[in-house]
Amino acid sequence: MRLTHMRSSGDEERRLSDLRKKMPRELRALPIHVEFYFTSALYSTRMRKGHIRIVAHEAFIGAPYAVIRSLMWTALRADEAEGAPVAKHAARVKAYAAGDTFADVLLELELDEDATSIASDTHGQYFDLAEIFERVNTEYFNGTVARPRLTWNRTITHRKFGHYQPTTDTLMISITLDQAHVPAYAIEFVMYHELLHKRLGIDMVNGRRYAHTTEFRTQERAFRYYEKAQAFLAQLSHTVRSGN
Ligand SMILES: [Zn+2]
Image 1 (cartoon, rainbow, N blue to C red):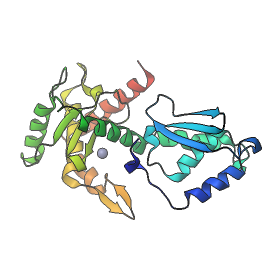
Image 2: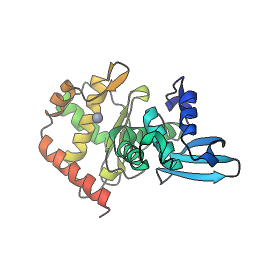
Image 3: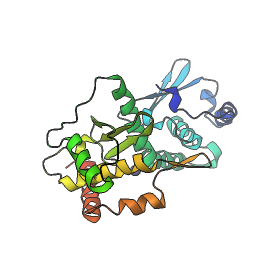
């Protein structure tokens, strides 16, 4: 687990003790261990002798405290908690897991693992990321973008098809796009989108990251097949999600 991704707040201990008061009486005294792992489930709970173990999916690392707290409440089925039914907390957890931040963290974590492994190959089965980068860089940036480290991710994704990590200057494209039926314009669009992130950087406002600014969206629309690419990716996302 990478603690660098954790956002810690000074009064979490106090909030935890608030939560405890609302838990079923027999569980109140037990220590709770929340651990983050790469698992297929969003979370699981085990009542062990002497402690409660909650295993949360590792992409919850860095989630807002409200989400982690809802996850704990859902996992512990602390029904009466805060007068809110478990369903409300479960919905908050599900919504977060379906969102962009969760997808981002997932890819970030994969990048971290990649960084320590051998240099990645830009050749996929159908596409070569180096070629795609050259084409997009020439056509949209007059060849002025320095080539980032290009890599395929290793797991199928359905929400995010690309990711740019500024700290390591690494651009990752989802292996989901390396298929015969994926048109070149779709993968070029994802490359273009991620290169815009490299070019435009991230705006920080009140400590929050804003990557898709108005300027970003305007430039994104300069992509020649913008509408077609968006439509294709939306369809692909739907297909992968429904598993057919
Ligand atoms: Zn983006």
